[in-house]
Image (cartoon, rainbow, N blue to C red):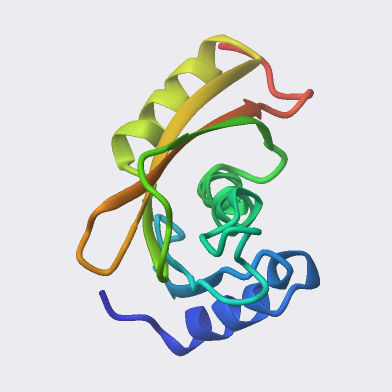
Length: 156
C-alpha cells in the first residue's frame, strides 16, 4: 500500500479542490491505479449537524466523487461516467472521525467492460461503509454510477 510521489501530488490536488474541501472529507490514500482510495471525515464544526453528530450531507459529499473518478481513470478515454443516485442507510450516529475504504475491483471493471461491449450504457451499484476508528459501521452508502461508452465506438 505504498503511494508514489506522483499519487501523493494527485491526492493533494484533489483534496484542495474547492468542491471537495467543502465536504469536510480528506483523501488519505490513493493507489497508483486509482482502484483504492481511503477517506477520513473528521467530526468538527464544519461537518456536524444540529445535534452534534456527523451531518449526512458531509457523509455523502466526502465519498461521492470517488467511484466516478476511479471508473473514469480505469476505462479508455471518451467514456462518460456520472453519479446517478445515492442511498444512505444510517446505522448509528457518527460521534467521531469516520473512515471509508473505497475499492474498485477487477471483477467490477470486467463486468462493466463486458456489459459495455454489448450495450451502449450501464449502471452499477457500489456500497461504501463509513466506520469509526474501531470499525463500527455508522452509515452504509449505496451509490449508483452511470457509465456510457463513446458515441463513435461500435458494438462488435
